[in-house]
Image (tube, rainbow, N blue to C red):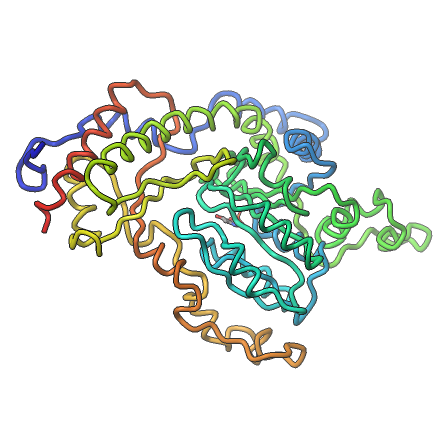
Length: 431
Ligand SMILES: Cc1ncc(COP(=O)(O)O)c(C=O)c1O
């Protein structure tokens, strides 16, 4: 059915702008968070929410330990330190992620080895992990990008074969599942950002989870001096020697979570499953509708992917647009969607391949090119364009649509997908 696109003066397909803006706004706090914050301010033990939050977060994931952090980046630093990453070691990481997932590797004077991604999901590709494992590999960091869960069976079996720990960066995947098990509890250590855009938040914050006592205690030693007297292992408790009138001392970082962030995060955790299921309902409705249209007209547009055996979550809704299949540039397609009232985004919507960041070229950012050119690095490290072609292609194809976080009427969803379908069906008019 040919209809005049709004871009050319036709009737706008989607007009429920205000209702839509309120349903896509995130985060939104309620009286519950405000009450929780006030209770802390009025309480005698203002630090109590941190460990309360840890107990609840650990229970939610079915793990022994949760260690709250001031942000996700510090929890990743702690995880890498916990599993024993040392200067000159190599850490395998996805080329397609937020760059602060990778900088903690460099902060430990270790070398990031970028792995390519699976074309549909942008999840790290186990086949490329296998190619990049070497005797220098000390850890594998796996992100679940935008909420899509990586191929964990393949990754974990590779890691076990080579005896390498797996760190999951679940900053996009709070509450996601793989074969019924929660993301973060699949590998050896799970890390979460609780920054404001995340599926549950403390406005800022992070958490590290693990079942491994040694990893937990090492993470405490790195950045939580107040925990040292309570650690089980003597080798770590010796950083607190009251008989010598010494205060507990850690390795120089202070990664404690802000207690008000913990109070907010406690409330958010209680709602996480309910919120994830609302998002899931909305976004799977849209995905199904787009797939139906595409089934009739071609393969130039793909909504986000959900792998079998996974229950992904919806931090973002990042689609793939193949301009080479229809000759219409991505920006033109986005312009047409926007004209219909669909707030689509392109360009920086997706992550740039991490190694495109100037710090991987300008070795002078750290003194004398450290760590890349340090004496303990046994091979020449370079990060040329093209080393992870799928990640580069994925970024060029991204078209972002908003996530609908709140319950909306069926009418709204129908009008929304009809407006998208209108552009898809009339793509040739954009040539
Ligand atoms: C995938 C990923 N990892 C790590 C981080 C870092 O978390 P934070 O901003 O809380 O330090 C983020 C933050 O956006 C992220 O998206």
